[in-house]
Image (cartoon, rainbow, N blue to C red; front, side, top):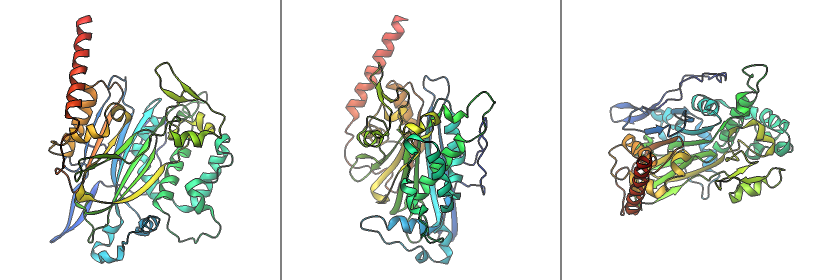
Length: 414
């Protein structure tokens, strides 16, 4: 079963005050009225997780259905080249509410404890839906108060919301909304009361990646994401968790997110203006200031002034759902040990999304994953019709044999 975003955060952090109860029901028109399908159904969305060899689980994931102003999607689509046409009024009054429906999926990979990833699992959806443009100025001023990298922060994607001549009723874009939500989550975590007078807020020493996937049908009338031919797909991403698009037309996998590490070209360029340093440890892994693998993410308060930012990379694209098999949301316990193409080929025979997610996590475990490993599989209209051949079967079989031989050798030595 999926863990739903309607659960409240527990532990040392106060829950963010949500404005409504959230549902996981996708609503759609039928010839006889209205139908509803729960995202929690294993036939609709699949998820699987493993603790690996770690003492506790720091991964988390969530799903729910958001209600957003259709004008925001229009404003977002207008930024694409060429801008696609979509008129929410064209769906008619009977389907007006369906034009506001957005399927939300989140994958969060925590470190330094689960407090941040669990907060994002339980609260980020509420922050995302409820934030308003008027909050941008306060959030940017708070970021500037962190000093260092943020001392002269101009707001980044939030800069248009700070303009004095901005019409008060102008809709935000999804890029602006996602950026504001990520910053609000960071602010809430880093200004939360300490559990005791002698200890800092938990998010000073822990953090999490955050990878969001938003799906909005552009069909008329709107259809569920898993049967939509014309689908708006938005990713909002910070860290090294991963979102992968699997084509059924070509049989190829394509990553939709970047890895936000200090040795990546774009991140290295962004961080040059700070006084931090990239340190490579004895295992050959590069870490910012010798401690942080991810240079974008939520939490990690003690490294904020050195450039660890919650700013997400946000991208919107239009896809033909009938030409795509599924979307994969992965933590690096999976993506660091298996290629995108291996995972697409692996799940070709899966009967449903849950079986696919379990196959992914099981494969990661069998080839040697020791980190927490989580996968979510979101099917699209082209599910089960992957063209081409399995290009990585021999490689996967070889890796499995090698892993079993290593395991057998260890057992003999013991």
